Each structure stands twice: as structure tokens, then as C-alpha cells.
Amino acid sequence: MSFWMWFWTVNFAVAGTAFAVIAVIVAIRGVADLRAMLAALAAERNRQ
Amino acid sequence: MNFTTLDWAIVAIYLALTLAAGLAGRKYISNAADFLLAGRHLGKFIGVATLAATEIGTITFMYYAELGYKTGFSSFVNGLIAGAVMIFLGATGFMIFKLRDLGLTTVPEFFEVKYSRRLRLVAGFLVAIGGLLNMGVFLKVEGTFLTIVAGLPLSDLKWTMTVILALELLYTVLGGMVSVVITDFIQFVMLSLGTILITGYVIGHVGWGNMQHAVLTNLGANGFSPLSNPDYGWAYIFFQLLLWTAIDVCWQTTAMRTFATKDPRTSQKVFLWTGFIFLGRGMMPMLWGIGALAYFGAGHDSLQAMPEMIARILPTGILGLVVAGMLAATMSVNSSYLLGWSSVISQDIVLPLRRTPLSDGSQVVLNRVVNVLVSLFVLFWGVWYVLPGPVYFYLNITGTLFLAGAFAAFIGGLFWKRANTAGGYCAMIGGAVGSVTYFFNIPAAYAGMSAFALAALGMIAGSLIARPVPLKIPKSGDDQQRINNG
Image (cartoon, rainbow over all chains, first blue to last red; front, side, top):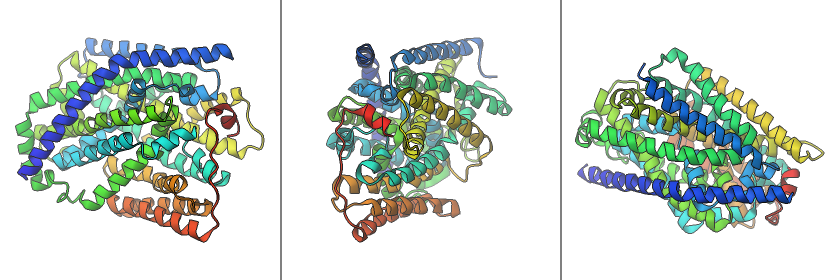
């Protein structure tokens, strides 16, 4: 059982850290992606 | 009432911002392809945001917390499998690369590409039934969370459900996928903040050591080892591995993100990054459930324990921020699911049944009408349906209703030259029959495994008996023509 306690503690630490780090990166860099998507949609709409 | 004026103000400001952003998406819609797939312009980061926001809702937090409360740290196996499978698919591109390359719009469309239009129709029906039954319990579970945390009486649950639905319906109907992606991004930021805040408060308030002690006292070794826990075991683990692979490949809302990315490589990257998010998406709310077990002890209502604990341990202001985050999670999931299942009904059932194609404008109107009808179904199903067991198992099984058959048909269609329409029918029927055994007192693990086994056997047997049909792959890029053809 001590193996499982250790195993889940490590898993939780990795999962929580990855979640927080990726959330920050996506929150910052997603803005540029969103702008690019809207610009592409607007350009398509203008072409039509 | 747990909410103060400050909490209500935070929630109101968030809702106003989301609605404004969602409604702004309407001006970018010029055709059905934009409405359903945002013109296939999703980049990596916005792709991660929309995929994560779509698959992380208050419903996710509730069913995972329920598992944490009932099965302790053993429940973490669910989060581990969900994340690991997605990371594997993202790293290898297995199936998702080929699927994005096909340029599909909906999951059942694959059945027409590889098999036949009639099988697409059958698949469309099964996908719609499974999807609607699945989504049908969302509002009630989410409404329960928000009602308890805000400190409203549970008799107000129906009104909470109606308000949530009306808000998300408003921008989804008008702006389609573009609005969903814009709001998903805001919602991703809010729900991530809420998730991290709650996790920090639960660990700080309850304590990691107390949680381990509570699990040991109440559940013993079964609370730590998923192999010895009677709710899990090897059969369950195999079922979850198959189920999560099928969800990542064939689940309409996930697949729509795959189809909407700029190219197959971007799809892979989105899956790889989101896979790591999925590890935390599972384990953090499960920990909240374990925290509730330590906080209240055993014998509490397993679904209500987590929100009741949160309402007690979070201070004013933070509570409003967290509820705004949970509301964000709720709306992002529901709006995407609303769009996802509605698109299947309109594109894969209504359009194939028509003899003449619909104009582009009429298709957008059709999608909007179906959005409203699906919403009404979800509201009424949520009010009167009583769940037969844990929410997570119910969602697994209603998803498996079509996922088992669809997954076998996808594998056959992509990798086996001999696969044909007869195999496709047998796979869909076998998968559906296997999964409904859950409603006749068969444990979820065995019902799920039998669904995947019957679907695979059906695909093999049906294909070997009937003649092979060559794979017809449409050229990607001609979205509008293909959407017009239904």
C-alpha cells in the first residue's frame, strides 16, 4: 500500500504542475492564435 | 446563502463579458463550415484551450469528485488513463492524423466516406441517442453544484438549470463554433484558475496527511490500489484504455476540434499538450472528493459532499471567483456539446434524409433550430431522469453506446482493406447491445468490455462474410460542397 501512496503522490504532483504550467502558457500564447483565427475568418468573409 | 454581494458581482461581470465575447463571434460566420468548424483555422494554443475547456466542465468535477469520495486514491487511475491515452495519441498521431487529413465535418460522415450513406444515417442515430442521453444529465449535476455552492435552496435547482441553459444557448445559436472557440478561451482561463484555487484550498484546509488517513480508515487498501478495489480491477482498466482511445478519436466534440485544426500536425500537438492537462483534469477534482471524505467522513451524499465542502472552506471573493470559473467550465462544455450533437442531427440525420440539398443559409438556420430542440430535451431529461449509479459510469456507458461500434468501424475503415458496410452495421449493433447490458445490472466494466468485444467481432465477422469495398477518400479543402451534400 505504501507503494500506491507514493505512486499517487508523484502522479498528482506531476499532473498538478503540468496543468498549472500549460494553463499559463496557453492563456498567454492563445491570444495570438485567437487573433489569427479571427483574421483568417474575416479575410475569407471579405473575399466572399 | 453563501454568496455575498462581492461574489455575485464577480459572477455577473464574468457572465456579461462571456456573453459579449460570444455574441461578437456572430459577425465571423459566413457559411456552414465557419459555423461548425470555425473555418478550420485552429492553431495549437487556441486548440488546446478549446479542447480542454470543452472536456472540463462542472460535470467533470462532480463525477470525478464523486469517484474520489467513494473510491479514494484508487480513482486516480481514471485520470491517469485519460491523460496517458491522449498523450500517446498526440505523440504518435495514431488515427487522429489520418482523420484530420480526411477533412471530415462530423464523426458519422466517416461512415459515408468509407462505408455507405445508410450506415452514416444509422451511425448518426446512435451517436445522437448516445450523445443526448449522455448530455441529458449534465444540467442537473452542474446545477446541483452551483446551487449548493451559492447557498441557494435545492428547490431552486430547476431555475439554476434553466438560466445556465438560456445563457449558453444564446451565443451558441448565434455564433456557432466561432463563438464557442472565443468563449472557450476565456472559460479555459477562468476554469484553470478555479481548479488551481480549489485544489490549493482543499490541500491547505484539509491537509494531505488527513486525506491519506481518511482513505485508509474508511476504505482500507481498496482506497489506494485500483487493482484490489472492487469498482475497478484489470477488466475496468482495459475498458478505460479502449474507451478513452475511442473518446479521443470518435467523440463528436473532441473530433470537431481535430477536424477544426489547421492541419494534421497541429492536431497532434493539441492532443499532446491537452493530454497533460487531462492528467490534472482527473486527479485534482478526485482529490477534492477525497478532501470531502476527510472533511465530512463516510455516509454523506457522495455527489453533494464536494460542493458542500467547497462552500464551507472558501472565503468570500474567492468563492465568487471559483463559481465564475465553474460556471465557465459549465458553459464551455455545454455549448460545445450542444453544437456537437446538434451538428450530428442536422448533418448526419436530417440532410441525408432530404432528397435535395439545403442552401447554405438554410443549413445555418437548421443548425440553430436543432440547437434549441436539443436544449429543451436536455432540460426535461435532467429534471425527471434518476441516475442508476455513479454519474461517471452512466456517462461511460451512454458514450459507449455508439463509441464501441464507431471505434471498431474507424479502425477497420482506416487500417483494414477488407472492412466493409456489413462489418460496419454489425460493429454498431454489437457495440450498442453490449453497452445497454449495464441497465440490466451488469457492472460497468463488463458491460463496456462486452460492447467493445462485440463491436470488434461484428466488424470482423461482417466484413469477412460480405464483399470488400475500396476506400473512397474525399479531397480535403472542399468543405462547403461536402457540407452541402450532407
